[in-house]
Amino acid sequence: MKRHSPNITRRLFLEGGTAAAATGVIAVGESWPLVAVAAKETIADGLTAVASTSDAVVVQRLSADFLANPAIPALASFILQNFGSSLTSFQVDLLKAILLEVSEQEILRAIILGLPLTNDQKFELTEIRADFRHNRAIQELVAAGAQAKRSSQLPTYVNNVVQTNLLAFPEPPTTGILTLDILLGEFAAIRLSPAFSGLATALAPIMQSPDFITFLRARPPEMVVNFIPVDIRIALSLSSDPDISLIDVLKGALEIFAAVVGFAVFVVTTPFSAPVYIAATAATLAGTTAGAIDLFEGLTPSPSPSPSPSPSLPPD
Image (cartoon, rainbow, N blue to C red; front, top):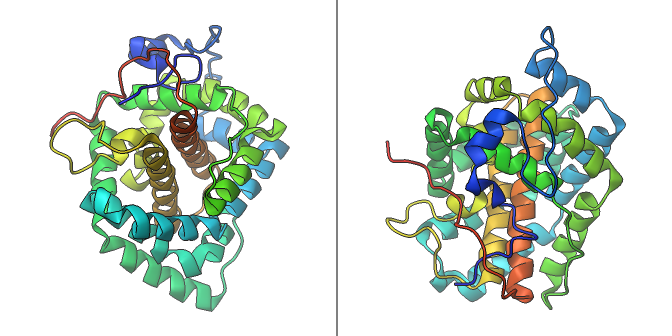
């Protein structure tokens, strides 16, 4: 299977990602020196300050609108109907998780924006949580998040998120699938916005502080799973090579869904907290970016060689 060209891949950190996380140098384009978080300022303080900026407010609103886009469940249904036989049981359950939230997307949007829920919405939220708990793909995602909390790979995963969000994002090509084109167009509006660039730049030094790893390990697995690379997530439950035999367009779409489901699970299980939500949003947008880039490369193949795929979670 074709792999990624080095000029757009988000996985360049693998040539020394752990070292980069330790030294605070971002290995994309030019080196970015780590800006230390002030001694008296906690990671939560730094994230809270960023979350209150106009850039963060704009990105949170755009992200909430993106998750409420009806094109998401429509595309999931299209893939199940046309490619279901090519998917693993985990991937099928992942798409079913998308369909579970179809009628409840406005609840997710309200939670992301910190808006109060009506009594009816609170009742519906309880039902969503129950449905998610019984979905096998979500069970595996949460288990992977719990494992990642203990993993030595976690700093590398966080560095991956930072690097991916600092990458230049290309204009999306036309796929010929209406729902996918709508979805990619709306995501590109987020990713190409000045607000996103400002947010990614502001979060980079905070997330590359060693203290951020301590902060993240103290969070629930439903948050931590959003930092696991999406190519690893869609390969959960496979016993061998995680680079599964899927056409790149389909693989990229599944990776986008893995990012969306991971964030949805976080939103419905985690009380709203500005510093936690802004970090999870950044991780989700990085995962969506990674999936979109894989999808774009499937439409416009590159002959350039690429580095190795993301490191998988080590066995328990």
